[in-house]
Length: 444
Image (tube, rainbow, N blue to C red; front, side, top):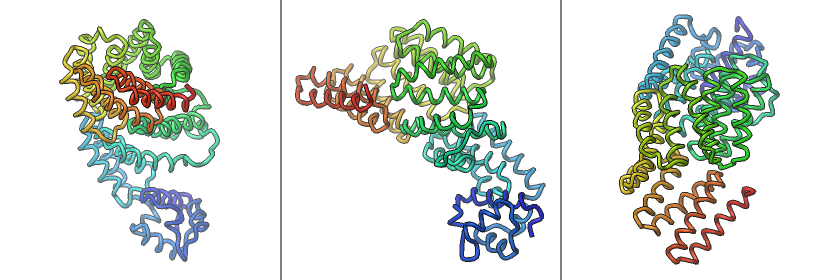
């Protein structure tokens, strides 16, 4: 019989989660769902039930009784530390292989804490490799294990600070990955849901970083009123906390919102504050990402500064390439360099680079949409206006599917203007109607 009933229930639940089995899938003629729930809650299991569970879970009965041996647990911790170090050094492929070897260990689930650490590491390594669908699947499963997304749960922030931080870290990564594949609705939903569950106890560094990630999704949706309100809320909270991590996150995205509003001075001030806060941290990946974002703001809102932006981007590219940055982070930096090429007058190079990036990262729909819009701008500069209008309308359709109505409406309107310039009044009218339709649907 199980010597520790609660421990035995934790073991069974952990092994089931590792194998992605529902209670229904694990149940059988001799094991009802109700009986499994009781066992997972700590009720004693019979020897026959243990044998049946061992067969279904494909693990030794002793693992169900006692979990991992102490020496094996120590080995796994050491292996996890090695994988974490590889990921931190930017060796995502190596880290991914190490994490994958761990999560396929049939006994790992008997230590749910170690399994969650390995699964999260594997998801982050997959994201760094650009394999966003795999990262999303793993992060969604982890979040459902810790806090089922379909259930109406009360605020959880007061239960266990360490678990709260872990849930926020998972939700933050999931929110970010969903934004990158273009599912802005899901990205916002995860961010908002996690806020309501995890932050009633007050702001933390991780909570403000989650807020900044959510703000980035709202920026992509073009919801400027919401962006202004959230950016102000995050900045106020970060100033109250006064920590470098909180100030970096709040000022970083706040600078983008200020730039969107045309307030160049405010954007520069917040950018400088973000860099100053970041100087107190050791994080090469975020250094490159932050520098690239500030350079992108220059290109978008102060295009005459393209030479300065290019220098910033080249520095950021080196920082990203030598860090744990994801392939998507690096691709965004390279896309901004293509934008700098266009502003410097080399439209052919810009179109080529943007098109190549879109082809290289087909799962990152947000990146692909940005790349196609840049291709359209380059084609227009090359006097290939009809091709530019077609590419831009295609990007508009993609943005509409991503539930980014503000950006979609703008793309259709610009396509309409290009068609009107060519004398294609019928095509221009259709594109303008599409722009209005998308805008009306969004309440614009």
